[in-house]
Length: 502
Ligand code: FUL
Image (cartoon, rainbow, N blue to C red; front, side, top):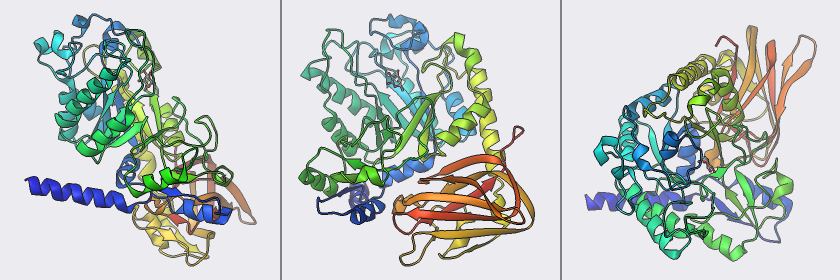
């Protein structure tokens, strides 16, 4: 048994050693070299797995659910916590049905109340009426995830407004103890989510978080887990609206750190928060102009978090404000469709259930996704490219097989022909990001019988790019890759019809 674990961890570490998710830049590098290097930055296996999930769910649940608040102050009476009908399988079934692949539970929010019976505090579920103090909601969620083959993640708030040691070194030990419980008692953990909030604790002090120790612990105990968003693997997109950037690079410029430090980081698995150039508010974080002054380059993809309701926690007075299936579809386009992963929060109510309104809209969203994306109109065309190979693989549903150009070609024009007119209003593109993110500019046109007319265009593609436009009716379409950092790749190419009815 021990040998198997040793072999498995050796295999995992050698897989992580092979990818190049950090590359150093030297002052002697000219723009051409920088761009070439950028095109060769690739995701780690854990980042690659995470990106392909597309849809992940957040469950904000805790004492705030019972006090009707968004941020507790750590002084709440936890005897109010009693979700009598709690059914974690109901939560997981609802998200699975809608196409979600992973779920994250708020094991502890800023109020310090723990949804598992932590040995290190009295401020936990063990001192509530729930199952007479014998409950463990982290376990219930982890078990349901395993049963329905959904990835499992934990949110552990570094900011703790209850714990008396907050603001002192002892708190970092307390945090390590809690993290260890979560990483050792619930089986495989696929995502650990750290929030950036760092306010004052019960003693009025602020904490200096010991992130490095926490990351090392996660890498040791759960090497496959991505660490988001105060973490090295996944970055916050910068809004809580579900809307990401139209130009979204996963390869970003690093700043401030010395080249020696970046070189050292690139030798092993990344376990620090990268110092990036620019701000999370910038509309462009990784185009050519942004890369020229960088000291290093890092694969650091975006997660787009938003709640299905106005608040993160459940409030009865928001029952009529649950996002509609149409709105959820719009969000899918502006998050996953802009090279991000969607983290959609669906907060359980005081009974411990996802409310009917939320289940209904989630299910309808899942159905809308199936109806829209099950019929790829591009699949029925005869397709040619002026340069490139493996064109048929763009329609095989596999990300590992892909169209690419030959030799030094960084542009290509792909033409699709149908015997009869087809109509569509969505273009879906996917690069094979396992080899890097490369496409910088593209455009799509249809032939109206006498001339070519543009119907959409864009900059980055990355893992997925979705574009909506007025319905096009045509027998001939061409797609032009106008600029790419190295040989462009297209793993999938789709044309779809999105309507009010579907
Ligand atoms: C924020 C927190 O302060 C909110 O309460 C929520 O947990 C959100 C996802 O992150 O920073």
